[in-house]
View: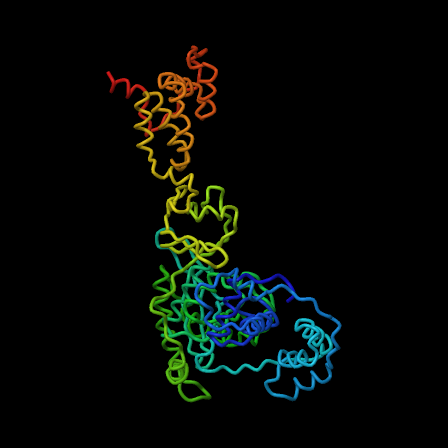
Length: 517
């Protein structure tokens, strides 16, 4: 197979679309952002490996990869050239005959012949003049076409007077032309996904496929043959058990239904609202809803019935049922595990197993949860925490040596330091508040406080006093003071030295002196 090997997550998506949703290789390729020949290659590998669907429970990505890509065996690459004249004739005259079928027959005759990718590439070079015209026949419940109107509607902020350009989302069903429209503040991923959720709810079911235009919110990288679908958009499709098939670039017939729906919405809804003033998005959507009902019930000119009646007769019975709960907006990002076995999500840090340090993970997060995945396997799950600069740590994720630190608390360190002396406690509190996360100071404090066993608590108290005066608050600085006997010598120009850190959580030595006396 040419090119870069797919991720296991994308391979599993290919298998799901093929065996669970029964989609064609071309549709799967469009949905997953790969070539149809690549899809065919993976399906063939599955067949050769004797897999069954669904895949065995617990089958890891590593095991699946080894089964799909066994070590290559040497072979003679000098297969006979295919007869492309005969190939062309078969494709033109035989119904349901495909290049994949013809290649399989060729390989049966010539086991050492050329591979599928070479076979397709060279045939297409030979048949460069072939003009393939795709006929569009929309079955009931098959496709929902989605697009944004080019026209916007002004929404005025009643408090500031600021004018927002509301975007108009349009969805059209292929068979009945039943239309849905709504206004959103942007075309960003949150509004894009939300509009799909509300469109499915409006229709009361889910189509087999969704055909979007090449919008950046849904398609990360625009390419005629291999559009890369946004992971969040893929997650939406998986939740509703449908498939995303983006319209091809510069192929207007792929999105003709959507373009026609947009034109109708602009003529029959937006044109009628041109003289209205709206002060909220809800007010605008209420007006759109009323005119949308009129549009869908408007009788056809050349056909019997209306969009509404054809929807009830054709599309509605064929739609797949909605899931038990609507899709919850999820975000995806790639992260590298830090040396402290945490990953960052929106300014907060979540732990993962320490064995994954420096590994790249995928994180899926919603307003309520954070999931960390490695090779498509969930390795950590947390409740979402909005506190920036904080850490959420699961004890089992720590290395064994670090787990013992989880038994410590700032209060425990403070009590230990107070037994040694007020200056030691001030230094301890200072280190705890200086670090973004108190646990980051634990190892340093353990080292400092244990110096009292080697040098005596009285000398450690004097060393902490000196360290505070010169603002040298580290284990190495205090150890150096004790090792060189500086704790027993007066500090030069003490009055000119930096004052210790002032903080509302640090009581200071005077507090403890007054408490003692």
